[in-house]
Image 1 (cartoon, one colour):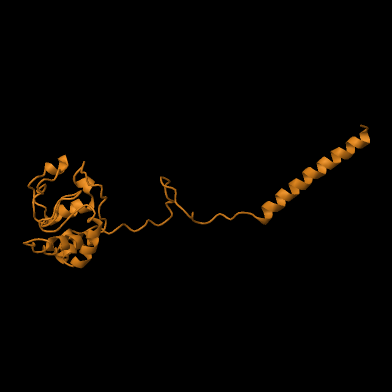
Image 2 (cartoon, rainbow, N blue to C red):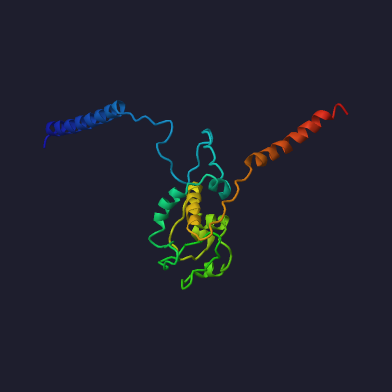
Length: 208
């Protein structure tokens, strides 16, 4: 191959490289990505930007008596359908995968005859199923009784737990009276009064 032929191939190769470079630069200019101000998703474990406002804290759950004051027992009957696959709540009904729940409100733990309770619940035998105890159980059975055989994850909404408890209470020969709702106004007024006292003392000090 003479030098003239070599120069033609070298020139063609150089032209191809320059053409690819021009296309690459032109593409970057035409389709330059724009970074969003905020990410469209959050990666767990990565700290948030301190400049971003903190999300409002979830409202603290009130005592179950507060929700029982306005509980709808008919809604509780619908919620019980989640439990009906394992539990019977008819008077004199047989145990299923779980024990019969007729009259459960106020009844002692591990009282269903012939049912094989887990060791944790058997250890509470006779302890009354109070409103608070039943609420804690329905909220998170595995936390209430570690090692329990019940696979149910629990009911997260306190309003739903209260509705279910109101309905279960009606399935009894002697339904218990619903607990009185806590006096929220008095509970909230007390911290305000305590906070106002130092200010009043400070204002009175110069006069003394």
